[in-house]
Amino acid sequence: MDVLKFQVRYGYIVIKRMNFGGENKMTYNYTEEWSREKIFEVADELVGKTLGEIDKSGWLEKKANKGKIGNMIQSDFFGIPANSISGPDFIHHGIELKVTPVLEKSMRDYTSKERLVLSMINYENDYKIPFEESVVNKKAKDMLLIFYLHKENMPVKDFRIIKTTLFELPLDDELQVRQDYEAIIGKIREGKAHEISEKQQVFLGACTKGQGKGKDFVKQPFSPELAKKRAYSYKVGYMSAYVRGLLRLQKTEHINVPKEKSFVEGIKEILDTYNERTASEINNMLSDKQSSNSKKFFI
Image (cartoon, rainbow, N blue to C red; front, side, top):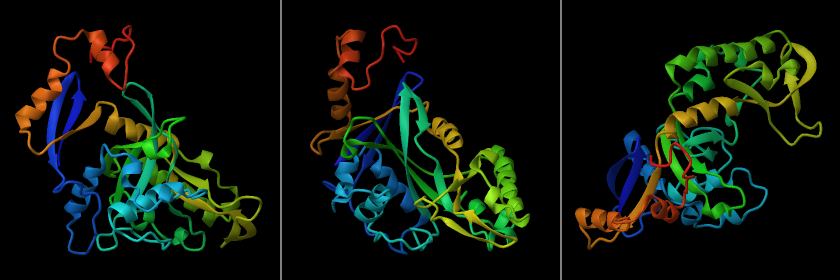
């Protein structure tokens, strides 16, 4: 089935045609024969799909499973068995899969719903590792990010994937991330890992991990005092800025076009739907209605 992807940018409609290579190509089997490029090309097919359309194994029905959406996409779409083993999900290419929710505050104004956790902090070892060789720096180039739109009072199965991308740490942000990393490592070297707080960093946080209730304390190398388990993570504020950079000027809708229709016929049929209608009538036909008093009404 062919899909026409409409992207509204600055008031213009950009049309991209995609072919899924079959009636309903929704399951793959990742292998070492794949190229790095293929991973991201295949991931792009997820855009516009709801989580319910991807779930083939009942992942969304599981309760109290924080990682179920990521595991679902990993196993039911890419064909990679879900597991708890530390390391890259696309093992032959060293790429990790990260699925994260975003919120749409208003038209084209997005924010991240949560921080992006990268890896656990290893107090016993990380202080020996310079930033260049750190897991933080390595993951600045080797993460496939998949964003889905979270909406309150909507079933999880109806949440829609809106963007996939290779995470690339902007050069302008690298210095601050480096400074945040070195601040965390500095606390460990000083025997003050127990004093680390997520508020002390700007972009790269040190969030707490675990079940709570006093059960999540571990040893640190330069002090007898136990420290809370923590993980390197990009803070909510930083991820919100990153998401806005990706999505603010992009509004995407997917329309399925039957095989028997040509590209031109498909476009004409879609646009004819709005022919000879007023702006108010068209606005009422859209799922994302805008206030007629808004300056963005005609964009």
